[in-house]
Amino acid sequence: VRSCDTSPLFPSHFPAGASMPLTHTHDELSAWLRLSLEPDLGPSLAYALLSALGEPAQIYARRAAELMRHVPQSLALQLASEPLGEIAEKIETTLRWVEEPGRHILTLADPAYPRQLLTIADPPLLLYVAGEPAQRSKPGLAVVGARSATPGGAENARAFSRHLAAQGWSVVSGLALGIDGAAHEGALAAGPEGAGTVAVMGTGIDRIYPAAHRDLAHRIAAHGALISELPLGTQVRAFNFPRRNRLVAGLARGVLVVEAAKQSGSLITARLAAESGREVFAIPGSIHSPLSRGCHALIRQGAKLVETAQDITDELGLPTPDARPAPAARSVQARSPAAPESPLLHALGHDPLHLDALQARTGLDTATLQAQLLELELAGHVARLDDGRFQRLAS
Image 1: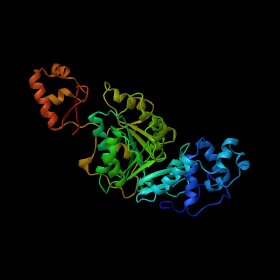
Image 2: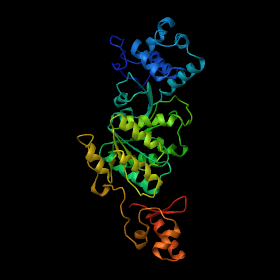
Image 3: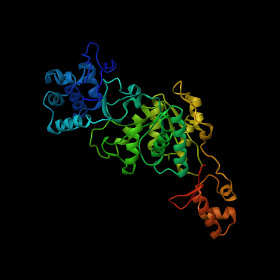
């Protein structure tokens, strides 16, 4: 079976003296897949079995009486029997899937398994990877934020990510709409000399979500990696996304939150990162913006306030000795004044405004104001938000 290379078993998960396979044969990978798919077998019980009995093939070779020393009787009988028909079918489907080029399954026994995930409380038994598995070994920096990002927030995510990828950081995010998608786009924009990007999915790796990111996902697989711990065919389920966030945090040395409401999945990612000893960074924003409140809360709790991508590399250093700084023209700020400056842009400031508030600031009549806003919008200096407000864009 392709992509299952030679590997020692990690001693933190397996007992001394356990048999240590040199390769994953078809049967050995089948056993890993079965263990990950086994009904009613949670992570903690799976780890206990691996620690006590060795690799999955050894677990399934045991009699029920032996297994009952470690798991309840009903589960011991299940493990000692042939796999259920549905499980057997999923195993065969997955074994066919991994035979295709660019597809990989990394188990805890693989040297390519991301070692940084071993520092989290419950590393996945295995990972499904589409793309380049070596991408996971590059130093990672997570960039996360709101799905309903403002144009300015999305622009910041793209610019920061491009700069970080050019410096040698692999940008890790969750493939969601908004900030996640912009972060992946920015990392890809750094080109072949950049460190690329990793998208951690909350669905099966063969189920792209959201559908709007199908093309983006294909480009990530071509120039980075898609990763999921969920079985093939797993559809969208809300409870899988917080678990996805722990992998985003676990794969990175630090997490940058670009925009986040006060109740946000990005804050979960930041909390998990902090609990695992990772650095947390946050971009400040307008005190009037709901999407700044999560970032401001993080800063109050000790996250590092950043205004430029260089602030992050100053804190973490360059990830590799040969990483090259991005050209000066690409040095990124969280907010840059639009050029050329105009009285209307000056009046607009950096907070989104409704037309009537902008009219009160400028004293312009409605027709003139709308004409100037349209001109600025076409020039890429201003964006009209879904709620009718106008937002100044960095340039």
